[in-house]
Image (tube, rainbow, N blue to C red; front, side, top):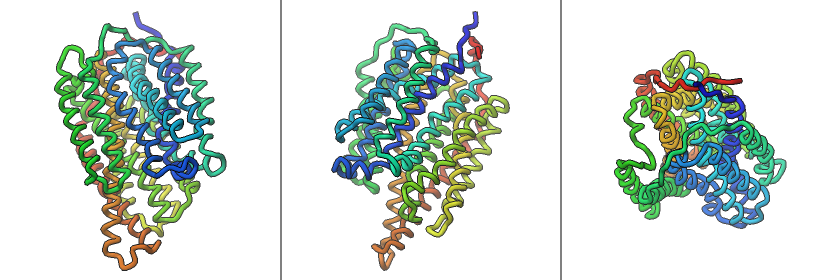
Length: 477
């Protein structure tokens, strides 16, 4: 007998709570300068408010594949949203750095559980022909929310205090939790399973070291020669190799059997590329606008806002287009748009108009919006139901890891380009020359991303629509 779910109410509850968590991930990035003054902390210490969030996600997400089999959907939803809400309340009333840092860890722990749960629930309650539209709405969580973080936070800080970044999120969280408690059902079967302790230790060391190492390299700019960075990345890689080898047992923490499915592999590669394009542009473009073009933080927030809104709206459209036409007719045009916009980004100078920057960022965000939902839907659609939880956990884990790696590599390229320009300058301390150096570094970053996008375009030519045998559910509206 077919199981009926109130798909709209379930999706609304998950996405509202997920939106708050992903918005929080990037919301403080633009407030770090203010927080350094308020708490009398260094830039390296303040950066932990962002790095700590990413680190918690990177450590916790690999466990969710097993946790989704050990606990019910409602249990995981309640624990994740309580953690997210408690963290948000503490952040809103924080009086020192330590309190705010603890609140960020709680927020990230809640989000680390919730994000894979969202994907897994969608795979169970929606039939394959409607998953694209549902995943399109997930774009509101995965890319729209983090893109909105710096944009809205800049405006909030200009007129209110940084506390209101979190205060204004609490009503949304309350609504999401109430919807979830009323409508969310247990959609998966609980199985007797224990977490393999050696796998858990290797996963924590591996993913934690990789995320922390790359994040630290990004903070330091050209920090790759830093002994701590090199040690963390080497330790992380070794631990991950041992972790992967360890998963060849009867109770894997993450089932790497998902990589036997070619469309899953291609889809996850394209999603990771989207994460790199999005996070890198969100970091480098505001830096260029501030140092290269001389714009204020509040103006930069307004400049980023239209692209964020377009990205969220277009992801919902792109999901429906995927359902109707398949992945290639959505993803290939998206990658062409991304390649062209990145090429134009390499031509920006301090004299470029604000209108041109807004337009280019909107075009890039639109291209990413076409690629993302179709890639992740097609990837997960090829998996059999017993691998949904593991596929969701691997997808969300690799996204966060790739975000940290992308930012670190981008900052390294940016710093290298700036140093090379200033080394040949006759007046390297003059504001105009620093602006020109920022331009040179930014152009190198966008040029590198354009080359990566070309690689993504070639990969996308092999993409085919996935077929799934899971047709056990139907919608109830």
